[in-house]
Length: 414
Ligand code: SF4
View 1 (tube, protein in one colour):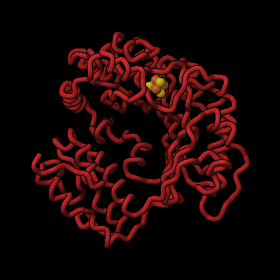
View 2 (view 1 turned 135 degrees about the vertical axis):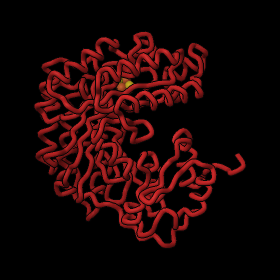
View 3 (view 1 turned 30 degrees about the horizontal axis):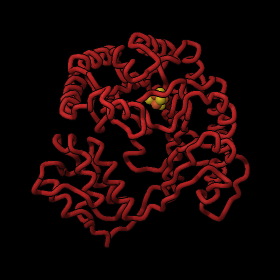
View 4 (view 1 turned 60 degrees about the horizontal axis):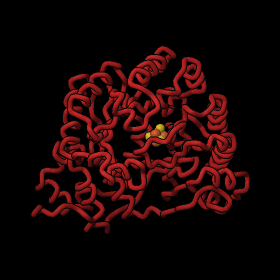
């Protein structure tokens, strides 16, 4: 059990800067493995959504008194599927409602099938300075299995178009552990990705999410159950190959060239304040973790100029029915300490002793003495003068380590 008696809780304040996430719930086609809050075939809702999104942005800008913004992330969904004029309007509204840092990292997720030279120029012009492209594989057969609407060649062409347009910070997402994926196919995908010389690579192991068409196909035997051991081998192969090619792993699923880590995602892993706008977007600020209602149609009917300032709590003013916020959880010191450990341990640099003590008044070794001792004995974590971090072995068994900090950790006898 954590020892919470000595905590002096001092979480970071949103007035010191936030990450701003915009959720775009539209996709041209729905990939069969995806359980995100995204929809195909509702393009008729795009214009209403764009109006409501800007209303929500203006509302938060007022309620939070124009807070500083360190990063912006347009995700989803497929932001690159939105008309460029809508994206430009949204960027202008962000700048008129928030204090965007001149050095802010502004990322947009992009589907290779959407990239043209004209669109790329417009995205750049609107302020986007980092592209995160969902490639997933450079094997056409696997892309087809994943229901992607682009080929491997189109992904490569899209990447070059973005580079030619002037983007200088470029990330690629890949998925491994796919049904029928051989080590050779994975190796080929890594070759192609490395050959494009991106600045950042994110690798995700395929998860079979309940309720998706892929889950049905696996349950009915159309596709085999993914092999965890094979996926672990693919992960280790990627670690080796990326390290040999100038990438540094800085998080369980993320590698970058020097100083090109995702600043926005670092805000999540360092458990700093962020605001999510759009249907189903999640936020953490003002001592609360909260989420917007998920339905894009309902979002458009609810968000407007109806919110009223209710006391000093900005989140209260945005709760339904006046605003889109639906689920709110107060972050107690006990929850904050667990979340700070769980997220920070994902980073290769681990949980910095200095940052932790600034936030909680005492070190993690005081709050989690037994848990840390147990994890050290199991060889799953390491302690240096600077930080507590996962060991190589711990990185493969991250969930077991994280569970320890929420009170459900591994048994020593296992
Ligand atoms: S494009 Fe991305 S967000 Fe859209 S359905 Fe496919 S995986 Fe999901």
